[in-house]
Image 1 (spheres, rainbow, N blue to C red):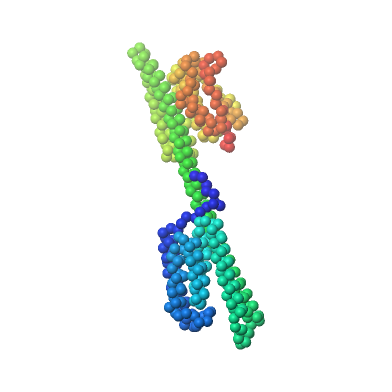
Image 2: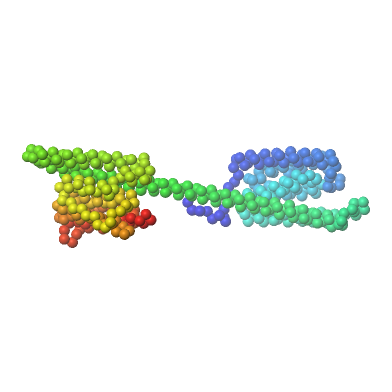
Length: 417
């Protein structure tokens, strides 16, 4: 999934739970407005002379509160309606409690936090704020042109007219700047949350892809191991069973030896298959311990000899421990090469050499056969290449200049290779 252009991000609409919450907020504001109106009326604390009756106060409070029910669904429309009602209520001398100001603050904030068209959100709020300051300026002019302040009120350190002008300007600047800034912060926080959720979802999908890739790689590894085990041992068993059948009447002792080899090979194959299936239930270290390694090569060579091959084995360099995965791959490469010789090459002699180099383990399996090439296609050669490639090694397989076939593999033995 392509990452969205976050500067062009549009906030999704409110959820059903958020819509229900808006209804609750509108009800709470309405109840608070009614209470504040009753309190102001009871103490006579009106900001305007000759205020309207109580019923008209309550009507304006209800009119200002109702639009909040859909404030997040239609933020721009709610702000415009609330702004018009706010000015109309003050023009009617009915804006004495704090609730109308709180409703206007909430409406401006909601546009900043929820309006999807950010250009419209910015300029509509600026327009409303400018309109409110024009209305404030109009009221200040009326105040300056009104009757003089009674002398008994001139008790402060500043001129009451100047104090009234400064108080109105500073209070409204703080009020509208705060409403604008809080709305922007809410929008930014929502966008950041959307980014985090997208990145978390991408991480989850990436992990799922990695798991699927690991499963596929593990299946391929098991398939290679199954091929190595089955192809090698079944080939040996087939050759020995055929030899036993041919000499069963003429040489029972030789036939018995051949059948014993078949039995031994079958048990070995079953043991390896059990170890391979145990991979599915064991951790990685246990997997390598259960799988065959370099110490099992002599037994593998002996099995090849029992199939009628003349096998020579040489170890060069100073033997040392190699990583378990490298040991398993080395064993499988030799096993597959010998299997190909038994099946295809028609060779009489096979030379298996293992060299311990400074940073690598090198293997060579060379035969003198003149039969069909032991490396022409098939899953075995592909499996050998994949095994060697896993460790960053190299594999050469092809006919020798004189006769026969050569498989040479180089496996890095350093842990970080």
